[in-house]
View (tube, rainbow, N blue to C red):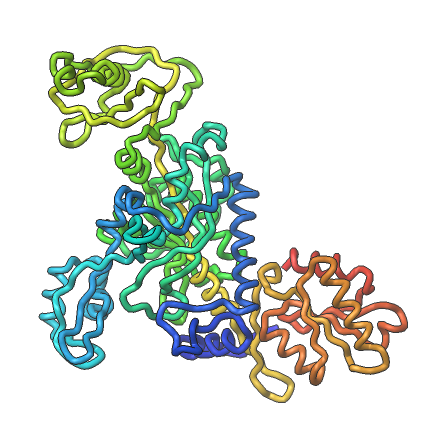
Length: 579
């Protein structure tokens, strides 16, 4: 069935989806009883179910299909975790305060919008210069603005009574995976590559959140940390599955082009095969949950906008009423996280990789200078000397010192910093059966709340009703819909309603999510189900009493078919899977 032309766009569709979402119980502002609070939203009954279905699809693809492990780690982490990860020092946005009457605070890049093509790439001095040049004043009261300054986005807390231990609500789920790496590597059969996923809440104390559920202070993430050998970037999945997938790509030169993933790899648009694989997987996932492929692109980060841990990143962006919105980031984090935690915790996080056959290699080994080790390390000098002999030049840091793994008297391993004067380099030939490496990481990171909102926008359509009225149809994929079928008695008499209620109970017992609706005309009930995104409506009528058949109506086409009631659970499942 053709849709009316044109469909609502921009602010118009945003307002209509917002109204629908609140009216039908998808999402609404938190704490409305007390006036609300920016950056907090609650998912209502239909929204919670839709979100759970999206998360379930993500787990099916990453755990069931890709064979990754799943973790559920703590929401609160001690300060040491985020010192190591760089979040204490680096996880900031630039903030500008109003010096006038209102004393409000603003994100610097928001104030610079319209005055610079990429305001989030500016440092504090550049922001100050730009705002002064353009004469930007407080948007609330017109007062003067202060200097831009960094504001850390993490929520701080104290663990335990009194002063307690300093802790933070996690701003991402990733660190729980990195600090559990030794356990996870063992459970992953001590092989590379392997992946670990985590679904859960994260928290960011946004300066001035706006754009509804697209920027929240408390939100849902789905992240995968995929660990690779440092010199290899091939995942266990077959890249051939995605070579012919055509996508809109925007590399760093800013020129959007449509090309297949295979061509992007062959032409050097994507240099990293693992990143390319997960871009393909991400595109397939987003399409499966209801993101319109025609309104999806993948944009490579500029060097100036990448996170402090990333060496490359491609964002999946969806076109919405808010413009292009980032839904997923596929980043190469290198060995940043494991190296930082290894350094901060003083524990060895390297792994031994066995070669297929022995290799003879030229290696620069660290040779201990014993006359310097003794005075420096005293009773530990012998253990440090053995650790130096086992290390190669990759253990040397930028300042010339070396970090080596020292075996303690009771078998405890620790990382020790050895000054440059305590060792020298010697080139030797060695026949090796394997090597110790610190794995590198490729991370696909998904913003679940943003994805669900974009699914609502991309699924929103309108069509003309019989009386010329405009009817809303939420064309959610059947497998994602919060309710699979609406059960509708044609009339509420002559036992028809009792038959319908019994059928509804049987469908629920079979594991299907249904909604019973016996109020108003049948046409009005169809319209209510269409607006809530219910893909199928099941009508029980007088013929049902005669031959035990019911009518299934399709949401998107209004087509109907008669099926035996006894076959209904299986029929609905088949229809949902085929959608």
